[in-house]
Image (cartoon, rainbow, N blue to C red):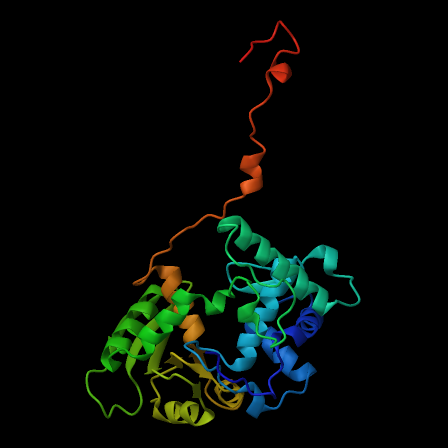
Amino acid sequence: MRTKIDPRVPRYSGLITPTYNALRTLGGSGSNEEILNQIIADLAIPDEVSDISHQGNTNMSELQYQLAWARTYMKNYGIIENSSRSIWSIKPEYMRVESLDDKAIISAVVRQGVERRKNNHSASEETPNPNQPEDDSPENDEVEYPDEAKPWRVRLTEILQTMDPYGFERLSQRVLRECGFSQVEVTKKSGDGGIDGTGKLKINGIFSFNVAFQCKRYSGLVGAGAIRDFRGSLTTDIEKGVLITTGTFSKAAKEEASNPGKQQIDLIDGEEFINKIAEYGIGVKEIKSYEIDEDFFKNYRVKEKSEWKQNENHITI
């Protein structure tokens, strides 16, 4: 059963053109975060709307979730592409396009999904209507889920959010080590002033920083207050703070963390944390699959004898 979506949040079907416009404003390419911020500015979306959490086992706000679907439709249609670093770019042939037909894009991609299902399943199975669903729900469209909402990521999010607190701190320690941190230690006692661990980060083998980190197993938004509290716990010997969460950060929290008049706090949200887990293969392993092109094999039909014997000098079969 689908959960009810707050009507104030734009749906994926209305975010295709804004995503395209945002990428053009950004110079033709941008990260998920840059696209999100640009769209919030372009559509004048208030903080209380952009911070609404998606009702499901994901680390995203509802706006981020809808944007992920919009990007997926655009990618499947061939308008944009993404790199392994989650940087999206407009394909060259679409850079000068003045406008997009959102409904046509959705319908074309849905038809692709229907055809894919027909090819990979029994022809006797009932197939859905290739038209856009009336409820405007992308989950009904036979379209592959966005990378951010893949079943394995949803399940891993659930596991992380229900981990033993100290276990999550030790997992964060492992991730930070894989990222290049050294001397990473987890605080063994409570009442440590908000610091869950410390470490060192050396840049280019020359510059070294003392780092403190805090871990929050949240299933929703981490607000600006958590940033201020963590910053207040940092001692004078700490040069960098890192706040890690299984949830996501509110717009106000991000602004507070990057406030130029205060000590900067680096943020790692649930999506980025899972990206690091996948990148370093920590407790997960990649499984490859294949999609069958049945038309390709149908072309390998048995030729008629007359086709093979057109020239008597040729070897016959």
